[in-house]
Structure formats: C-alpha cells, structure tokens
Image (cartoon, rainbow, N blue to C red):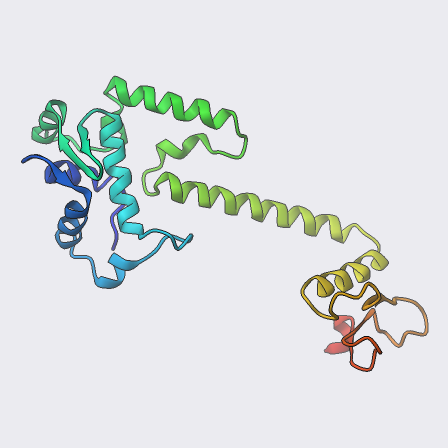
Amino acid sequence: MIPDYQTLMRPVLDASQYGEVSIKTVLETLANQFQLSEEERQELLPSGKQQKFSNRVNWAKSYLKQAGLVKATKRGCFVISEDGQKALVSSEKIDNAFLAKYAAFQEFKNRTKEASKKDDELPEVIIESFDSTPDEMLRKAHQSINDALALELLSSIRDCSPAFFEQLIVDLLIAMGYGGTSEDAGRALGRSGDNGIDGVIDQDPLGVDQILILPCNLLS
C-alpha cells in the first residue's frame, strides 16, 4: 500500500541526513523500504501524468522544505538542514502538525489560504489533508463540483416540460455523433399519433436509416 505523504515525511528527512541526495535516489530507497510492489510503484494519478508514489514523496519533501527542514542544493537534489537534524532525533511524529511549529511553514499555510480565498473553487483545507496531496485534493474538489452540477442539472430537467425533455434527448444524441452534422438530422415528436415515439434521428441525408427514441415503458 502506498503511504500517504505525511507518513513519508520522516523517511524523506532520514534519507537526506548524510548529505546531498537526489529525489530519484530517495524514491528508490523509500519504495524498497515500504516494500512496494511493481504495480504500486508504477501506479499513476488520475491525470495519468505522474506516478502516485513519486507525487507523494515530492510533496513530503516540498513541505519539509517549506518548514526549513531540508534545503534545495541543485535541481532535483536536497540536503537536510540544522533544524531538520534536530527534528530527526526527536521522537515526535513528523507531519503537518509538527511542521506547524515552524514560522516558515506557518507563512506557507497563510499564503496557501490567501490564494484559496481568491478562487471559491479552491479548498482551504488543501494543506490540512492527512491522506491526500494537494493534487489529489484538487481532483476530489473538482469531482465534487462536477457531482453537484450534475445533481443540479438533473433537478432542473425534472422541472421542465416533457416536450423540453424529448428535445433534450435528441440534442444529446446529435451531440454524441448520431445523425451526423445536419441540422435536420434529429427532431422531437411527442404528440398524438406518433405511436409513442418521442423522437427520430436520421442516420443518412435521405432518412432511410433512422434511430427511433422510445419512452422506457414501451421498451419494457
């Protein structure tokens, strides 16, 4: 199981205690330390652009850096600081609560909260998450927004007339690629004498091949 980024803070700090170390070396060391399977090592974030384990290790290192416990030396490399050495010999758990004792980390939290206030869709709890990195929190927030929007749309659709709903289904199927691009490819019926057919979509210009849209009760 891939550990969360806060669990990785002490191991990342420990990996840097003997001098400059590269993030690539730390990733390999910690993957072995936590006995991650090859599948876990290669598991990607939902974006498909970065490995989940790498993302969490990098965020752990980033937070340690924000608190001043490690210092960047050159691209992709870092070294433990004096404060980091003191933290490492401490028996306390190194997590966000521990880092909050450092003024530099408090300033970082304040900057993050100020930035989130400028965008109502950015959650202020990013920095407070115990299991997810900010990347994962943003994706969860984005999914929550999408879910809320979907529920709102469904509620609005239910309040509309049957004729609106029938036309909506036709428009949706046209947008999905049925019936090509012709403006006359689809049409809602929904009137007496239509034999229960709510809509029709022509698959070809002559209307020889058609998709008939039927209400659910006629399909059962």
